[in-house]
Image (cartoon, rainbow over all chains, first blue to last red; front, side, top):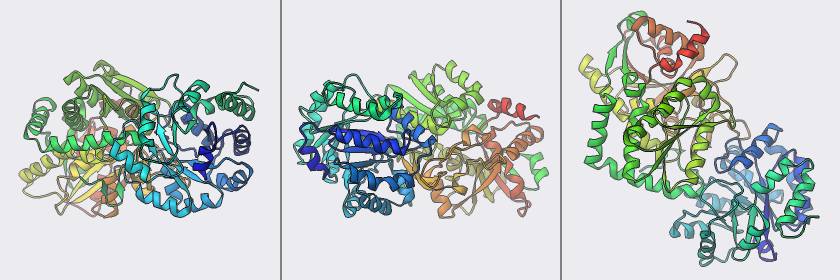
Length: 255
Length: 383
């Protein structure tokens, strides 16, 4: 259960990892060390050729993973092993086209069979109800995004068609580490919490342990993607780097 | 307003953008029903763009092909293509919405030039996203945009062409959505863009219909236009959509090595840049690289209304390759003294296929732009 996994962690940090970078074996090892280091849940990103919600780092990660020969079949063939070897619930993040191409229902049920627990779609259509029910019927949590621009009525509608946790987007913009984050996120999170019992996790732009610490004072969890992937891509030993960076984010000293 | 055309269209965008798309739809609906807005749009088209554009009887080309060819001369518009119609319409909308900054994407540079021109006319700052590959092959338009005071932002990600420029423009919009108006150039993207762009381009079809009736006393057998994203085609088609007239879109069949950008012919339904439409993609749903000698057609998707017109068989879509487009470019120069844009040359290039079996038929071809920008490319291939 994603909801429980977040609520029972004292410090719920959710790392994002682009699948297949530099290869799927490495992705599997990265998941393991992140899990051991205390990740509350782990987002696995399916690379896409045209990631319009992503900044330069995750664009580059996506592109490199595709160049390295990523395929959805190969990912699916690993998922079962991965989900069996980590405690943290696995969440798939994918643009909608790769899932549509394969067949939405079919893909949802395969993901569930392989032990995936949740799904994030950054380019959901305006009316997401059908996708929400399809996810629910497959036993997957559909984690929805609430943006700083989302009007209150729409926030309520989105959250009513959401499970697992609510993903509060901290900034107007695309993914990517930022040195400072807007103060409004505090109010945005408390607004959302006023009408839902689901945990509310904040993401986009998180880049250091202080931000994580600060955000955990009002949010139930924090999602970290670009900053982590940027470090992983630069590192000679990506698995070790992932572990070090995550431990640093959690606020412990480097090991 | 309809969000979908049958099973095509829709809004598949980051959550941040939904309020902006709603605002755009509301403002457009209000403006389009506002007499004052329409008057201002029409007077800009008349006094600045130079509309109506003529309908020219291509006499020597007609004799050569054995059909009666009428050219809708969008190449004679200010800035040299149909793109200015939409740029003027949307800039008036942006002003009405109080937006302080304009962004756009461009492939061939025609939409970029049209947008930069409209921004100069109304004194608004402008950033145009353009793939580095297109910057190289459409250099003259890059310089024109800079002269007009626009910032040309190079995009080197992915295939470094129109699709990547479009993604980058969307990213800018998500980031600066409060202050910035995204002036999309083709009939693609999330609702309401495909509808809005069609309405601003509808003037092409309305004029062409009146002109052909005035000149020949009857409707043409067919209306023919090139299709990349499909704004010039949807503009001219919309004037004839309720008539017993064949509507024919011409897609770019590319080089001889199987590289093309014919999304309707070879694509399957998929989501790119916020809409569901025919898309060139692999079995994993990754968008494929495309090729056309015409930068403005070099796009893996197509406007959702074209997908709908194809699926419902109201329009059909044909193929013309790079070589045929180049031949048509040369032919129109020699027989009519007109240099078409390489995009429009695809529509001209289809005529000899059409002429077989349609001897004597009258056709209207949308000559969507002029070819000065392509001289460099054509000269490389040899006159």
